[in-house]
Image (cartoon, rainbow, N blue to C red; front, side, top):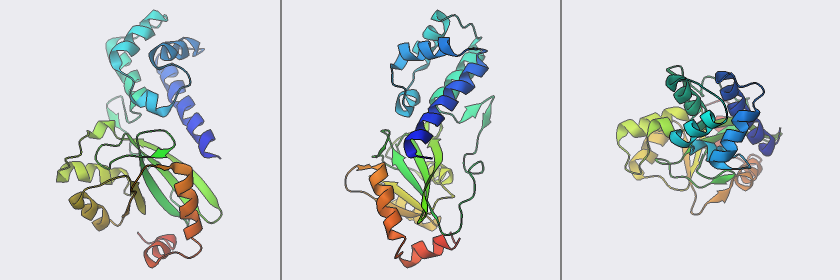
Length: 225
């Protein structure tokens, strides 16, 4: 599956789940309501930044009549994809285990297709397994439920580390010294980028490095972490 196809499927899945929650079948009224809120084409970045008030207005203008609790749950599903029915989903345990010989990387992102996020404030972590045989998307883990801010105390740092705890590498545009030390102590190698990078380019470079991996990467490829 290509990265572009994976993104399109994730967006479609978000919208499809919300259409089911709102008993909107076919989902065309919901699609039109979202178009009025964020415009076409739909992207994860647009959905992540969707505000509750305009969403509520457009949902009702397009004939849907959910109660307030259901409306809020639907909005959370769209913009965060982490909390529904009062339960916090754990994307780490729901992600398939990586195969031996591969590296799992988390990429801090604010813009679709870019690695341009600060560890403490990025909107999402894009997860990929990288092997010599290919690159496999493993989903997007939103961070809005964790709070933002480049000033990171131990609790905020640990919550973000927990979201990528199954990864071998964490690629960010910037990360502070104490958070970086905690990331390393968690068995994850931080990769700090001097400038934003295209996600595809960075993954391709990492894949090339698997031919002659440094010792820490070779250990991760054998299943150590």
